[in-house]
Amino acid sequence: MSAVSDPDLHRDLRQAVADLCRRFPDSYWRDLDRREAYPEEFVKTLTEAGYLAALIPEAFGGAGLGVQEASIILEEVNRSGGNAAACHAQMYIMGTLLRHGSEAQQREYLPRIASGELRLQAFGVTEPTSGTDTTRLQTMAVRRDDRYVVNGQKVWISRAEHSDLMLLLARTTPLDEVRRKTDGLSVFLVDLRAAVGNGLTIRRVRTMMNHATTELFFDDLEVPAENRIGEEGRGFRYLLDGLNAERILIAAECVGDGRWFIERAVRYANERIVFDRPIGKNQGVQFPLARAYVNVESADLMRIKAATLFDAGQPCGAEANMAKLLAADAAWEAANVAVQTHGGYGFAEEYDVERKFRECRLYQVAPISTNLILSYIGEHVLGLPRSF
Ligand SMILES: Cc1cc2nc3c(=O)[nH]c(=O)nc-3n(C[C@H](O)[C@H](O)[C@H](O)COP(=O)(O)OP(=O)(O)OC[C@H]3O[C@@H](n4cnc5c(N)ncnc54)[C@H](O)[C@@H]3O)c2cc1C
Image (tube, rainbow, N blue to C red; front, side, top):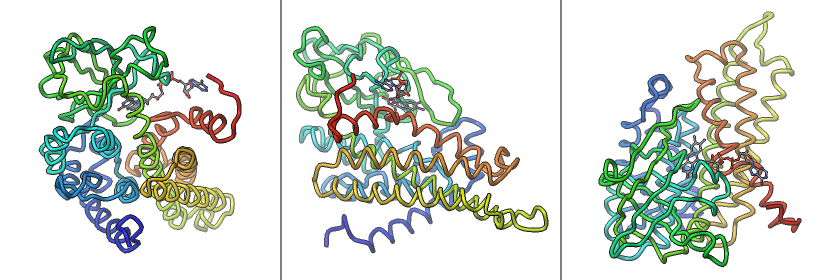
């Protein structure tokens, strides 16, 4: 039996990640949230334990596991009360380097990423003017001899201050010179350590949750041509290749969140006595919890289905998108129910429900918004007319 469908491996993996996460209790995440600080110690520990190298082949020092196992790792982080957003990108960016990087690039970077010497945690796609309409992005990379010179701006680029490397999507051929709007975009591996102060400025964006997200300004940043991944002009396709993995991994985090909210709310509903009875005795409190549980568990089935297809090399676009939508909705429903069940204490910092509530709201919008998933299903699964 392959590792991909091995239930013993999954059980052991869950247990091991959960054990590691117990060393980083609620108070650890609460303190970071208050200080808007990056979970440096947690990411270091997860890396040293090898979990962030789950997808890197064994030949390069990784664990050589599938997306299903990677998704279990991230799920357990969120289920423990933590936030895998601090480090999840290393898993979903990895596919671009694994599938489209040259042998030389793989030899150069993968072992050092696997050992934790280098972090690949930043992914530079979104821009202020183009938003979801990625092919209209304006950051240009112009070839000059053995380099590309990059000018432009990105927004919402998370973890750029905490990563050594960033995958950057930029135009190498202007939009009005390409046959299809998806042509003429290229992907680069940018060494952030060398770039900052030499053509790259990073500015932090404050958000409602602790997310270490930033704006990037490129002013004649030079990137060696050897850092381009794959062929020039085909970057959008490389990006699309990785999106299903990203959706499955985020779905798993949402399932982890959903389970955390329900566990906490059930515990509270059993303990809190009002009108001489546990509040959970009231069906008005029970039923929303039961419904949220049903929805989280159903979303999980779609996530497992999508991950199984992905790891078997089968098409899984519909399943990955559905898993992301169902899990993000289920987590958000569970978050609301958890706040409601906790009454006033749902708003108190010390219960952590309000922190997780803020954190899980993101997945209705990023990395892909609910509307865009629905439009994918409408057009590509149901065959309805293209809208945009
Ligand atoms: C905390 C955070 C972290 C992020 N991290 C990263 C990162 O690391 N790297 C990165 O590249 N990006 C990142 N993003 C960006 C994220 O992927 C985008 O915010 C998201 O894709 C939406 O783009 P936008 O914000 O420009 O919204 P817009 O594209 O302006 O859309 C606004 C709203 O309109 C809706 N909408 C737009 N067009 C349509 C349509 N045709 N039909 C129906 N509805 C539509 C959208 O669904 C959305 O709800 C992050 C965002 C956040 C908030």
